[in-house]
Length: 317
Ligand code: UDP
Ligand code: MG
Image (spheres, helix red, strand yellow):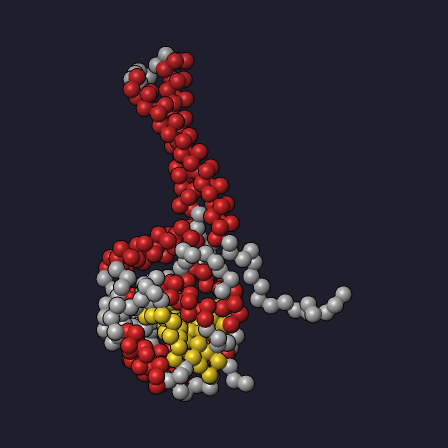
């Protein structure tokens, strides 16, 4: 039996793009040897997207629609698609034509060669402004420094996931999620495909600067404990600094009776004592953070390990 693939498309106010991406996909899908389904996840669109989707559904029974009761955001929409797909692999693709459907050939070729995850990486971001570019540069620098999972800059959501990855992905229970981050966390054999992302023609990108900042903050929090521990590190630094300075003043002023004539004033000494105590409070916060980190890990409830396959376990002892 030939293998099957599921195409998953999150849709938020894309009425003009829905027929276009459908045509683009169909052109590709007709020329490959796989069965397919196309899952549109309508993420609470307020325009005519639902009517456009119904039109497609009437002419093509490969089209499946998941309709959200309101807008839940792209991360949740893709999750719903992955949870409900039936193919031996799924391909996540944006509705706004910024992920060229023709690349699916390459995705499938890599999959056939044994890749379990294929990731589309944007080469040029000609459509974005300077602030977004600087923002994304800093984001990847920081997150790669502070998180255990390595993330390639400009890796997009344009991805193919093998069934084995889908099964593991479906085990995640955390609510506040970044789909990309979770997939990266899973590991597995990955391949990359580089592509130029064209400008969005119809509609507008719903991820503005603020929404992107929120996403970045969310990624930091869910992928790394560094922000939590930061207060503690700061505390250690301040306590050490203030402590050494205090010791110096004590020895210089009270033991040797100010041989260098520095004449530290009362307020200066008071300031250093205060600083020292602030440092200690920050260290305590850092300690509490460690416990919260523990709780965070337990609540996120990620699988403690991920198995690719097991060999010879049907053998009875
Ligand atoms: N999208 C969604 N829910 C949202 C925002 C966006 O399902 O709340 C979909 C949108 O329809 C598109 C994809 O996510 O198919 C990418 O959205 P967008 O182009 O706004 O993001 P960007 O290209 O800037 O990453
Ligand atoms: Mg887009």
